[in-house]
Length: 286
Ligand SMILES: Nc1ncnc2c1ncn2[C@@H]1O[C@H](COP(=O)(O)OP(=O)(O)O)[C@@H](O)[C@H]1O
Ligand SMILES: [Mg+2]
Image (cartoon, rainbow, N blue to C red; front, top):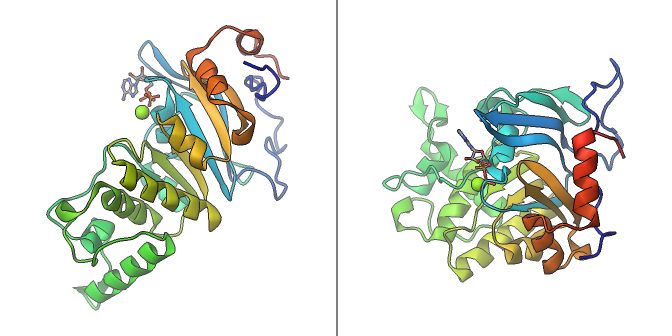
């Protein structure tokens, strides 16, 4: 594995930035969302260990790593489902907190998790608006919800049957599109997708990958967590590798080979990982 390709992504020092100083750049090319030194433990399991992570607009950032590397916990911190034990979150360079999923929604962060929470016996429209139905003159605004559903499905470029089809009758790719459409209500800036293709056929996977590229093309920052390296290689602009709750490498997708990625995932000892681990242990800034 070549050692120059990966950004040496050792965590920044665990000291807080001086009061008033923006810890994250606010230039136009600045990230929409940033995490700095974020840690999260469950009992003795250190699920996240001093993680620095950025999501930019118009970008798909692929996140890979072995089972239990901390990918879903990272996504859940961003989605407001888990609260970090320590560390800081920044939206547009301003320090923020994401105390709940509804707070995440309010901040423009949408998420879709492995465990798809859709109701089989309800149609596409009802699934999109479940728990947040539109009401007009004291009545359910069926027409309004149908129109918004059509608009969102069109916006994300999803290929779907009529919107009153029950979810139980949809293909896996169409279910995933329904879940993404539900997340897209309210026009979020950041979209977090945790293993969106894990239970899909090849054709359905292609459909979801097209959808992800479309989300990027219309300006969203997309975090794509996947155990499928070919999916990530197909659509990601930037790759982040997690290992044992830490970031073990980060690079533009075009700069890394399959072998590089596997080495970073499995922690094959080399100059890069030795250097990274030494710096991370000492919390030394680069
Ligand atoms: N709610 C939880 N309670 C206890 N441990 C958890 C919880 N969620 C995740 N973990 C642990 O945190 C580690 C990282 O999990 P996760 O982020 O789900 O991994 P993955 O990279 O496979 O998505 C694992 O060891 C997992 O068992
Ligand atoms: Mg996971």
